[in-house]
Length: 241
Image (cartoon, rainbow, N blue to C red; front, side):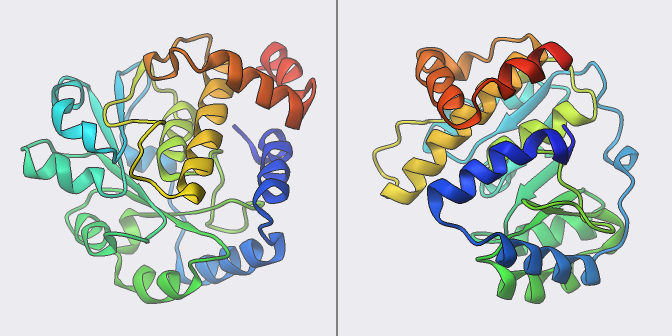
């Protein structure tokens, strides 16, 4: 996914949440000053492999086997800690530094890639934590247009950004332990973000010609929402992708 393709979705997200694009761009520029280029082949060869995109919902504890059996494990945020506690090593972590940045920093120092995300609401965390990461294992990402070493391969929340990253580098099957779009414990803002994650995963599913089990029962609503905010751009992307 390149930014030109993803930008209509990004603009719809800005409109829906009232986020400030200029703030995202400022955060991106700060990250660009702190980061170094990260060639994506440094992630390893994920082409054609089964990639577990581990979410941080409580159900992850019961679904660890799905991650353990995958060829590659990409963990969103605190999913990295849950998996480590159960003896499952992660091959990449995706985070916007809001919960367990110390885990992310430690992983980079162990030679595990971390996609560290800069957005308008986390500039203090970007300034504090990116200098603590091992440069060679830090992939800086943005919601806005990519600049310098900062990339945007699509996605919005940590979890769906992980899925878009896996797709971008040629992953085979994607599986989704630790995802719950109906988690009653989350606050209203997080629930809205999960709705967007489902929409974006549905877009990714369509682009890939794949069926993600995690979207069973949600496709009709996700399709309707995508049509409402993106019009026929999704259909054009499906035919062009």
